[in-house]
Length: 462
Image (cartoon, rainbow, N blue to C red; front, side):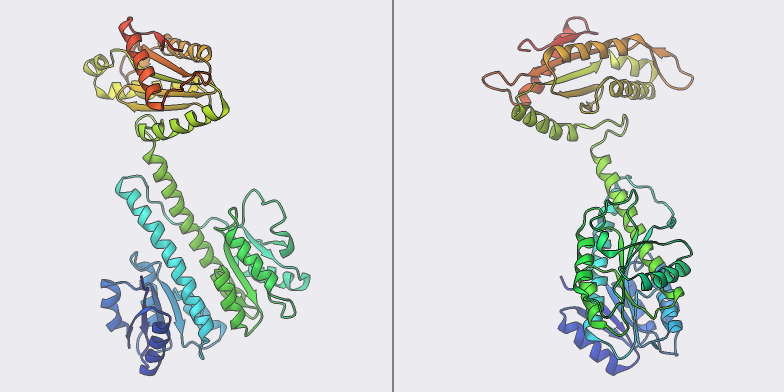
């Protein structure tokens, strides 16, 4: 699907030239002479990228960019400011207003298109995470948290002892906190620190150095599982748009030249850190949502959906390793009477306490799941029939020995459980299927209840 690029420039020839360049790169393009005409289109059909000439004195286009950044619908829109004077003051003003990049005239086509590709890749990533994040929100899985920037870990990678001192001072002045240094040749061979940096700054400013090694470094950082989410800023020699375009296409998040001032490099670095923090929060919420989808919301144990998938893995590994594994099905005796006498809130309290006792009685490797209502499952890898019987009796005693609370201010109740155990022994000629194992454990549970409850019953074959 083509990405939408919106152009705002009061000069007709500029709009035409930009439109031709973007069309040639297979983007959908709309162009407007001013912000007032563009605004309804932005609101009704937000573009993926904005190319805006900020030099027009007839309207406040800086305020327009700030509004886009403050609106949730366009907060992650890529913005490239064009037509600016190539001065520190002009660049800082545009970046401060919300632009992701400032490209002064005359435009370098290779750098322009590399910036466009980079910002659209980032836009795609945001949309992907936002879609999953929105699904989590619809299920009530994510809790909105205020955006905040904690002190970031910034690592300067430089093999030049002279420029590294100057760059470190520049970064520290711009960010307002210390910056660590490491030779670029050591970053991939050294053991990652306890905290992976939030931002790598790669010194490629030495014009006499071959840049291919540092390009490989940027690509490797981008592909490294432990470091791929960190930001990557590259410091380049002055007037090397060809290198800037190459670094961007290889995975750099920003490129700046050695003439940049401390306020600008600090602002650019903070923008990269802000993007990383936002993506970290999105990934965290998606992970939380995935965890919630396989977790029983009342007890915090795994649910049936997770248990059925995990049991296949336990059974497969047991057969491959030629070892036993055990299944327990258990439920609370006369649980309906607790609900009828004390209320469903009391029943929920009992279920939560039983879940806690279950987790304390079994190993980390064991699967504990709530299968529904008052029925629970325990799967024990590498467990013999004798070991499973002992574990089940221990659990039965732990439950029976101490009464359960029915909630704040409520009475305590005595609770017992019945347990059915089935064991798959790999020495049998025909190993049972997982469904057959569950049926065996269920049958043993029924036998335990029929025998008077508060009992452990092993399947006869075990």
